Image (tube, rainbow over all chains, first blue to last red; front, top):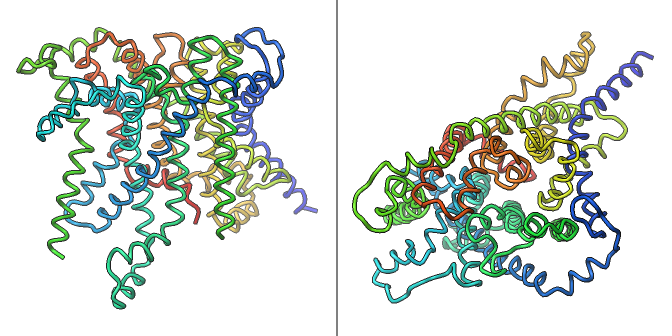
Length: 291
Length: 266
């Protein structure tokens, strides 16, 4: 009798304790995503909405600008492998624990503390016509290569991509360094005894053990490429020149807050949500199939 | 072996220069006037003086601190309670509740920002700090709840049962036993959220409508996108805005690393 009363009290306290977190998330994330789906089917200026139905989506899928924006997102994904392989090399070097490795670790991780706003401002000057990239090229006797990345559509996207890679170095190196701390070194010793060289050991022994960490950093990097670059683009290029660096997340903001088309903004947000959901489930399936 | 180590050291030094270079550029540029930036030799303090006149630096630093403190306090409160409940006080629907809260991590900010903005406007939250504080809190809660739930799962059930048998209420078990044990996880959440909120632009840009309530990152972002302020002045502002986050990073590097890698399954 007493146990059941206790059990009931336990359940009641549990519900009470989890309510604030649940309500907060429901009010500020759950409700808006539901509204976004509703408003994506309407013509909406933020105050008055008129139901149009899925026509909005169909019209959007016929718009060349929309596909241009998605193309930018797809091209930015080309930076993802670089943003994973470079940090893996860095983590590998740090893991050798040569003199001063802790100092180097602190420096490499520093970008994780810096705002995209600040990174964007510096990057803008780095790639500018009178900027540091050109000074550097001149310094190395390569003055004949004069770059002006930010003034062309594709060039500006390359500049955004390079900046993106630079700032992912910290986070991804942390992930791989954590991974390398879990490695079973006795396997390496055994392989070395059998005459395997460093490269083969890395490829056949280290990499498979790091699989979990590679997957994690891949997810983080792809999510960042789709949803974390707003501030960088806002400060660095404003989405331009033309639509050169307008990614889907930036297009959401632009449609709603620069052009006042809230319905279209909501719809683009829903599309972004579904792309992320599809990528997320694909990732889950991939992990499950391999296990 | 020695040779290989020296080579690694050399390569790491080069990389360190690449990673530190932007900071050197920021510092060097901030101590120049516009003319000096464009080629004239010498340094000056004029940009540091100017940043204080084009931007209410002190007020914005205070705003950043208040918004961070408010949001983090809410996150700690709701996520520690929910984490304890969902790990130790399970009830019939608790798995669904956990999935609902943690699953919200998958929602991109840009997907909800327009309706959330309209709601905040309808609920009359846009004039002060509250809209931004609540949105930041909601965005931080899913991951914090995930972290706290897995942390509390590590506390043995016997410990809690014993305390309850001794006559302690569940609320007191939480306050006197579970919460003190979870301090490391709480610190991780504080550090992670501080850096995220301090550095954010988008939420602040939309949800802090009144200029007097803007955070320093938003103030700086708005100034930069205006394209009328000199680079040298912007760099001085960047340094001011970056210092608090860098200091927190340098002190709590370990906790930050724990937080960033907490999502990797065992």
